[in-house]
Length: 128
Image (cartoon, rainbow, N blue to C red; front, side):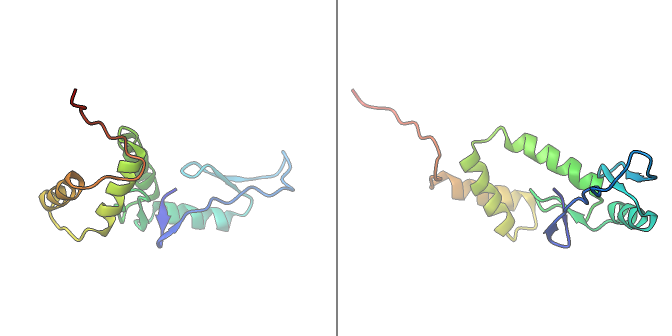
């Protein structure tokens, strides 16, 4: 879930006393149902505001839909890496203070080449 003000976004659950004949307001971006128009309007404004951040890479400020799309893209890219390696790399990226991408890549390469991560599979040749 995207982050808003540094906290994970929590969707509003529909009320238990909702009847099929009740008038509701649907927010297509978050797939939420509201019975009060003011709550629906506030959520629509919040979703469209540029105050969201991607929970995986920290990109932002962006809109809610852009943050969801960023998280989907990042999670697909991260699924190609081993989970222990991905977790270590993400930790380094978040802690890095690099302004240029080239500096970040150099930092990651120098860190990863000399270290192993918990749970990482290691292959080595055995001499006969």
